[in-house]
Every structure is written in structure tokens, then in C-alpha cells.
Length: 242
View (tube, rainbow, N blue to C red):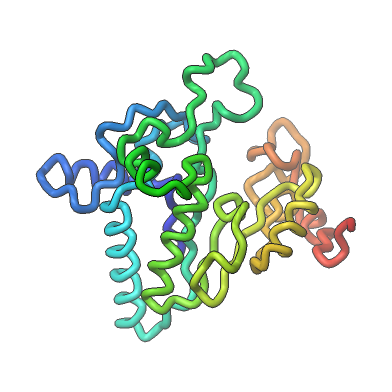
């Protein structure tokens, strides 16, 4: 199963915030004093991303993993692999294409969170600019404690880490960089870091793009102008450029 975090988690964040306002903040996922400005890839604010600096965020994941594992145990199906997502935990204004926006709005995620500032003051090794990596390692430890053998994630959540930093037997990434934007080099880097690779390159393997180039054909086109059955079967993952 996949439970995407810290980003793509608006339903969880809003639900736990409603719970907190009723008096139980044990699973709260956002710092109420955080004034960080963020714009996510879906144009939400910081209430769509779990704050990794909160102890209550850790408790939430511990509870989630235990409940999911219990369901698998009751069904007699081992929970050997767990997908934690990990992608797109960023303020898109820090990327290219937003020059017209004020620099004041281009803030690192959680950079104005008192909880993250307290963690930074207490631990000099904590790096708020790599908070997605910190969260990946934190979640992986919880998975290992629950005897889950493999953690899977979208590759940008683990980029910058190596297999040695994780406790589960296996760590795999869904590699979703486009090949023509340098994805081949990124693929080699992730493999060198000891991570298992699941190729999910969108310019060949995403099916929500137009089937052919035609104004009446519906679909996204951020990674490919079209994807047809013929194009999918021309993909040769063992014959990429070296």
C-alpha cells in the first residue's frame, strides 16, 4: 500500500487538525505557529504537507503503520513492502518559472515553524533544506520496528541518501524522472547509492498523456506530448544511453 507523506497528505493534515481543535492533538500534523509561506505542486498551502518536526507526526505514522499491519495480519497476507510516497515536498516558488513572484514568498518548507527551529537548535545535524530525507529515514525506522522488509518511495524523496542510512532490508525507488531531462544520469546515481530501482519514467510509462498528438485528445503533457501503445513497447530499459 502507499500512504504518501510528507506531501500529498492534505486529507490527513486537515482531519488531524479538526481532531486537535476538538481537544486531542496527539496526532496533529501541522505546527499551529508555523507562518511559512508555501505553494505546493497542487497549489495548496502548507496544510497539505505533514510537518516532520512534530512528535505528533511521528505518533501518527506509528499508529498508521500498526493499523495497516494489523489488517494484513488478520487477512493472513504479510505486509512485506510499504510505499511511503515522499515526493514533491517543496515550495514550487523556489523552482524555475516563478521570477515574477516576490522573493519574500520563496521560503523553504517549515523554515518558520517553531517546532523545526527547536529541532534545529537541539540537533546541529538537522538540515531543514533536506527535511524530506529526514522524514524518509524517520519513517523507515518505524517500518523496520514493525518488521516490514521493504520501503518504497518516489525517488525525489530519497535523493541525497544512501542505502546505508536505512534500516529495512530493502529500499526501492519509483524512478519517475523523464529520460530526456537527464533522467539517465539520475538513474545511475540512485543505483550507485545502493537503492533498488523501479523504472516509472513518465515519458514512456505514464498513461494519463494524450494517446496521439491531436487537439481533441485529452491528457497531460508535462513529460510527453503523447504516449501510445507502440511508444510504450519501444521502451528499452536495458538499452539506455550510457
